[in-house]
Amino acid sequence: MAEPFFEILEHPADIGFRAFADTLPALYVHAALAMLSIAGDPAQVMPKQGFPLTVTSGDREALMVDWLSEVLYWYDGKRVAFHDFRVLSLEEGTIRAIGIGEPRDPERHLSKLGIKAVTYHQLKVELRRGVWVAEVYLDV
Image 1 (cartoon, rainbow, N blue to C red):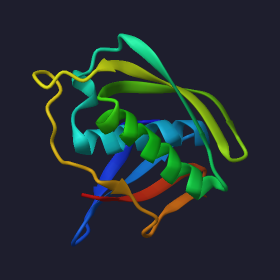
Image 2: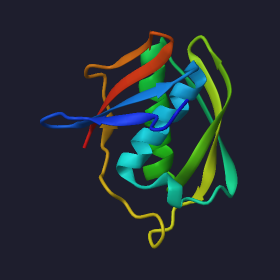
Image 3: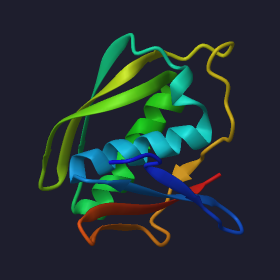
């Protein structure tokens, strides 16, 4: 998949992104990195350790919201900055992955925009002409 793997979507009250990938597991990775790129800068994070992430949900769209909400919880709640993700398995309604990063350091991991929540507003996770696409809006 050629870069860029996401683009920002304009919205009057929130902010959104459209992520792209060749495979569904890669789409979940790209969506998480897109969200984290809005909140901070994953490129500034050192890939020092792995953090296990497992999310189960009802369908593909709900799984995307729950996955991104879990990543956001680790980022804001557990204060972990992520550089990348490796999906171990993606089955019907469950994703198991490793988030690769380090504990957040306020001196090195500067925040750009505070994200309150991942929303279902205009949410899409679909295959378009052979490319997986996710459209997600965030409450900021």
